[in-house]
Each structure stands twice: as structure tokens, then as C-alpha cells.
Length: 288
Image (cartoon, rainbow, N blue to C red; front, side, top):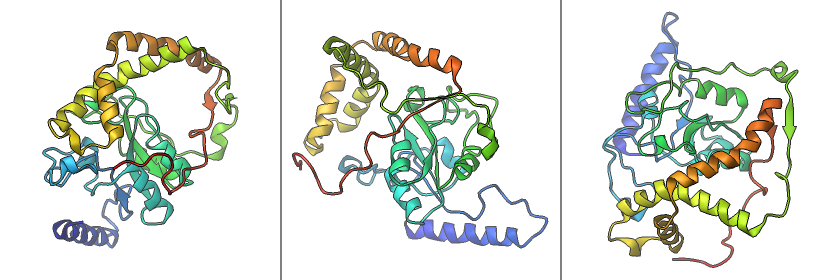
């Protein structure tokens, strides 16, 4: 945190303290509680390096729509999980494509929610990715719900953000009474035909590559020597991905069985990650 940001935080805390001492003051829902933002949700005129040497010293030119609702410094979903588990903060925001909210929440004994597409406004180009969502993390379902209810609603920079603004009811134990819940511990655990596996992988890359390939290439430019081998591999594979339209059709077909299941059940209960956690020590080949 810079000296300027620290002074801003002290001033905001002073204003909040004055509000609590005034019985007539309107106290906002999260007033006085700490909140951490994921760094890829930038704040205009703040450093937005996103953990990369390629971005050293880069300044954000625009603020994420969520930041306009919460003037707070940045962070990372994994870091948010650790910060909450260690008591440094109560709630935090994250972003999730394949589990970046849900997996840290699971590993840290917290709660995380990936909102449905369009519920929470995002920034281009990822606000058009139906897999990507910004959402809340907290130390209880009630905390997550309270934070989520401040995030949703339309925003003029996000054409995918839906209206009207939808708020969740604060959950109660009785809310689950009468629900039909399907349980799947291992998502089938059946052998996959090599041709089916190859098609699934091609489908995933058709979606992932169409968005992430150009994005990575634009940032990297002529600085590919600064990338980790893993990132280089992702960039190269994404650039060779299949047709996006074909991938979208395959995605719809792969979702159909789940869609039919949810016609008879209110929810599908299954593990988020498939392991209890990862060792801090490096495993496998090391990279520069």
C-alpha cells in the first residue's frame, strides 16, 4: 500500500467513525469491515502489474465496475483466501473461470460464490466470456450473501450485465427444507473413449483459445523470453485452437445432460476440487 492509499484509508475510516457516532447517519451494508479486491479488478491510476514482469510499473487506465462500488486496493483470489483464513479480512472479491473463487475458498475452509453469467458486471473482453465471473468470498454463507448483494446490477460499460438488479435472501437453515438435491461424488468415474476425450479437449481449446490466445499475444508482443514455459505453451496452443463456433456448439451439447438433470432437481452437490490441497514445495520439473 502506498502512502497516498494509506492516507485515503485513514480518511475513510475517520468518516465512517463519525457516521457511527451519528444516530441519524445512514450506515452502508459493509461499513467498517475490511475488504480485499482481486488485482485483475483494476483501480484507475493505480499500479496493475497482475504478478507479471511484463506489467511492471503499469498503471490502470480505468476502474473495474466493482471498484466503483468499493474503493479498495487489489489482490488475488488465492491471496484473498489466505487473508480471510488468517483473519486479515472478513470478505473479498475474486474472479472465477474454472474455479479461481471456489478452489481457494475450499482449500482455506471458506465460502465462495461464482455468480451466474451477467449477474455481476465485468470488464471487456472477459465480460463476454460466459465462463468468467467476478464474485464474492467470505467466511460464512451469510457473509458471502451480504457481499454479493452489493455487487450485482447493470453497468453502462458491460453489455452482458443484466437488469433488474437481483439480490439474494440471507440464507436460513430452513431454506433447504423440501429441496431435491442430486449428489455426485466423482462425476461418474467412467472410462472415457480416446475420441471423446480428444473432442472434449478440442472443444475447450476452441473456447479458451479464441479469448485467451489473442489476449496473451497482445500483452506479450516481442517479450516472449520473459514468460514461463507453461505460459508460452498456453499461448502457442491457444493460437492453434479450433473454430470458435464449433466449440460453442459442442459446449451446448456437453451441457445438455446436466440441464436435463436439473429439471428434476434443485441443485447438484459435488466436490469443488478433487484433492485436499497442494504441497507448498515444488513438485515435478522446475522452471525459471
